[in-house]
Amino acid sequence: MGSTNEILAGNAKLLKSRVSKLSIVGIWISIGAIIIATITTGYFQANEISLESVIEAQKNNASLWLLNTMPFVFGFWGQYVSSMIAFEASAMVVDQTNDLRAQAASFERSKIAILVVDIDRFKDINDTLGHSTGDRVIKQIAQRLRKIIPEPNTVARLGGDEFGIILKKFGTKEDAAEVVQTIKETLQVPLKLEGVRLDIDASIGITLYPEHGKDAQILLQLADVAMYQAKQKHCGFIMYTTTLDRCNTRRLTLMGELREAIINNELVAYYQPKIDIKTGKIKELEALVRWKHKVHGLVQPDDFIPMAEQTGLIKQLTLWILHESLMQCAKWNDEGFELGVSVNLSANDLMDVELPETITRTLDAHNVSPEKLLLEITESSVMLDPNRALEVLTNLSTLGVRLSVDDFGTGYSSLSYLSKLPVSELKIDKSFVMGMENNSNNTVIVQATIDLGHNLGLEVVAEGVETASSISLLQPLGCDTLQGYYFTIPLSAQEFNTWRSQNIATGRIRKKEGQLYMMLPEK
Ligand code: C2E
Ligand code: CA
Ligand code: CA
Image (cartoon, rainbow, N blue to C red; front, side, top):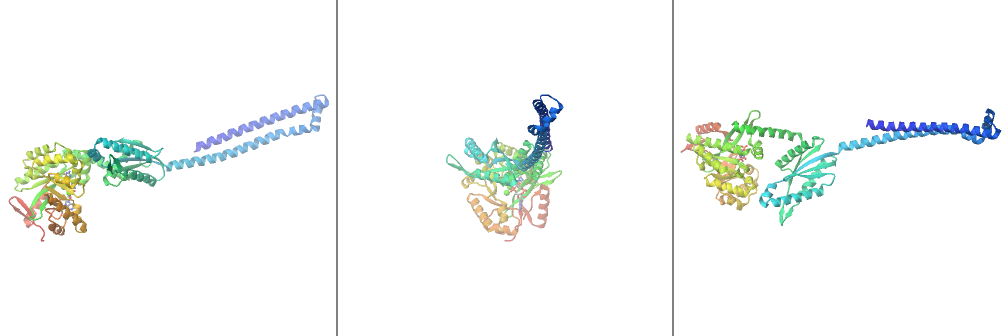
């Protein structure tokens, strides 16, 4: 701002000096004119050029008197005009300064927002309707976005089902959020492709310039982090905050470390029994992974399984838990306890056509028969690619391995599809079981799920059994198997052995022909 002031002040000075110069020239010209006019008038009056004739001319000629005022007029004009210029120039300086200040202030206020828009479950569209339909969906979405994002804003496809938007000139964060809301609403209007109605939704991550960064690449990366969070939380859109970054940095470091942890055997398998509701028999133990982290201590699976799924590390993790739990299973059998194990598979595992072979090899390596192994597959992971999942599951079941549908009730599998799956067990998600005592709706859901499972010839497991009263609610519903903190939290193999011995000592567990039976609460 200072320099603009100086330039304007300098210009005013220059103008003033020019005006002063002109007025001085004017004064000299008028003095010259007075001299010439006086001499000429004196000559015409007295016919000679002398001091007397000049004085005489000045005394008697009125027009010369008028001419005599000219230097004063020029002098006054010069002073007047230059002071006017000075006044106007300083007024201009003030005006311009205010203008610039206002401009700068509005520039500071008008932030730029970077949006990363990612279409939800686009893979499903591609997989079920084919890639050419997927491409057309992308095109239609692009057209819609372009329509509602006018210039000077920018919309671009970042790749796949991801779009980048640059919003320029908006005031507050709330303004940006409003635009994002409009984008979401526009995308939610169902698409019609060849008579098929498609419901589209998107997850959006937002970063602000200059608040979150000044580098375009960094802003885009951070918007991606926010988008990822929005997707995870199913909340539509999230504006970036530094806490996200901390999560993200931790996430990235953890993922690097997890790779090492699998190799260095820092993972630990925990086991939780699944108990027959009628006899109390421990049917098998569900293997649940934990990570003994050098710095963070015991890390729970919810904190690293989703990341491992996204980074593809889950494949190694599944291999590890299969090895570990089958080795433990063989050990228990050697010690006289006929315990089976159930292992959780992820969606990625179901895409792996080599999985049946890997499992056969692992069973052989530990000399465990296939019926001792149960694989738990979540309903939602099966539905990601139903055809592929059906193929892999069919191959697995022909090996003699049993299969279970986990977290049932949280996905969207159709009945007809479910009946095609070669599964033998259905696990009701713990949210319904745990909610039974406070909400009768949950009891209705649990009852319906048990009936559905039985109609399909499946055994039904209730997980999240925490209290004796929930067992008494489940018994009349015909539930087959119980799992939950009421019996025990998941325990390491060593802890399990101690727990078993202690409970055998107190009579809470009976051992009969290599099988373990838990005492159930009185009806
Ligand atoms: P899940 O397969 O549904 O496992 C059951 C979860 O419920 C376990 O949490 C278990 O500790 C918890 N649980 C059991 N009984 C009760 C109860 O009475 N009350 C409550 N509130 N919770 C109970 P955990 O061990 O933290 O595992 C969480 C999830 O992580 C698992 O859910 C599973 O989806 C995943 N996971 C764990 N281990 C593995 C693994 O080795 N491979 C894969 N792919 N996923 C795993
Ligand atoms: Ca499970
Ligand atoms: Ca479950």
